[in-house]
Length: 267
Image (cartoon, rainbow, N blue to C red):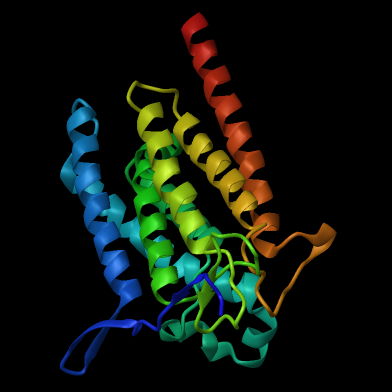
């Protein structure tokens, strides 16, 4: 008999109100949105009039749409494209699960660009306002993955291994908890510490992309690849391949931000 902890079955429906079922994912997203709204209010207070709560509320609305639409479209295109070609309506079946962080990131970027252009604001400044709000939501999402017993890790003999009821008889890394710790908690701490003092426009966005990309790339070594894709080029997973551009773009943004800031000081 294994000495590893066995994760029991947890009903994916957290609450049922009449005919309406509220899934744990929905609860996690709701909590994340409330926290993001609260934190955005704090950032407005610290912005010396540059932002107010009404503007932040509008931006969060567009960002939330970007996360949902981009996350779903990204998952279908990155991870389920052949199935989507045969079943186009699958893209609308959100209740069956399937969201991609990388797709959600693209959706948020598009939302930021739209908001910035519509309100005559700097795209980089808007991005810097948004990204500190994201790690809590990422962490909440990973807790949802753990509760749903999905996206578990690779088989391991490590004491950290957990037997997932739908993952076979062998212990696996709880990669969802690893991602919660890195992408949620640690990334939040890094961004919080970095933004305590004013920084050049774009540097916070760059740091977010760089740090997330590195954390996700590392965690993928413990995470079980998606069965329909497996290992890809050079033995990397899709999550790792999609994280590489994030690291590169993040590094470029940081360099650009500080170089541009230095030029402004000289002038």
